Length: 92
Image (cartoon, rainbow, N blue to C red; front, side):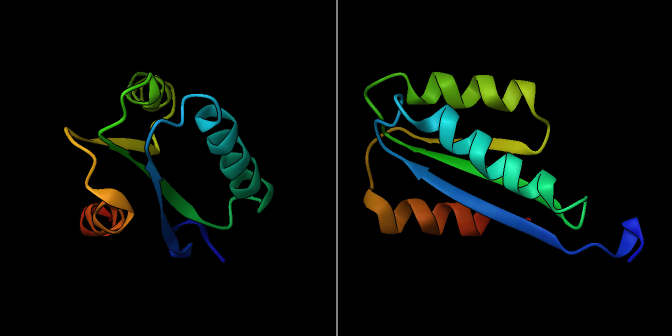
């Protein structure tokens, strides 16, 4: 499979007050994707669903460091279903 024909996948990560585990979880996802020998083009969409802790700040820092990560901030908690809808709607 040539680079141009690699499938593109979007991974939606809804978050609400996840400062303690967000970075570890994202690193785990990236490690898995990179272990596939560049089999995929990919993006990770982090939905900060109105977190009251440092989740949004950590997500923004990850996006600044890794081009394949995008962050969407919802000002209030709209619950998991709406966070997933937001992610799917914004997936490439």
